[in-house]
Length: 314
Image (cartoon, rainbow, N blue to C red):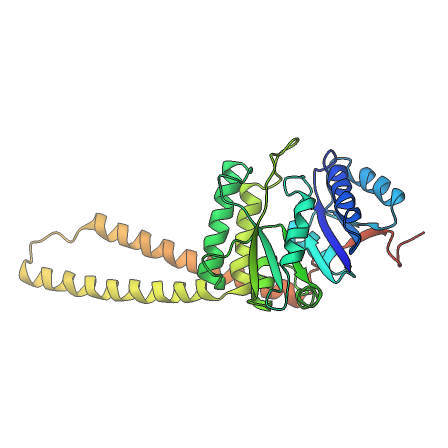
């Protein structure tokens, strides 16, 4: 059975070589499997592409996609997934914190009733920073509320999936991919397998507040209309409250003509309602903007060049 490993690479000049070596060692110890390793350089500012070139020169099963600019982790993963040929695809990080040796646990858990297997680790066993853990929890909550993810299902960047699921995911060609959403809309036969999570030896996570916010916006605008429904419900509630407050003001004036009308409370109400209107308009604009970009065929990714693929330049 051929296993395709897909790894997006960004600021991993010092770690990606060890990850590839671990994959080779794991597969060589299990003769039932063959492998291909697809490394996607997401326009990393360090010297990672030089390392990838060397890895590809040493092993024809190591294939490299060099993107023209930084498209983000999920777009880089989609670039790799579109090139896979394996019966099973494993996606993992380039920092070495998710040991490739644990990937066999994920592959073995795939079966007739399981199409996708996610690695799981509790927060005590997870070696990410506090900020990254907070982002993961917020992302998990969003998946539950907006995309219908089961509460007990843990979703991580380390997972294995069957070939037909990957093919279904690759049918999505729009500019804002969100892998968890693509998986959840493709199948409900998803399982978890506990794995070990290692300490990060060098460097730091490439995730920033900006990148996490961008990821969340991708998730709820590309795969859910619930935020629009919440906005509609909020507008109705505010309209009802405004109507009730208007009646209260009229009655108060009739009962006591000398009662002050309350300039401060009026301004507070106007600022609150105005802020809510701007928020709802911004959310609506986000949806419309993404529709516009999709109509104009904004690319998920652009390949500058590739190594060790059949259509690679010699």
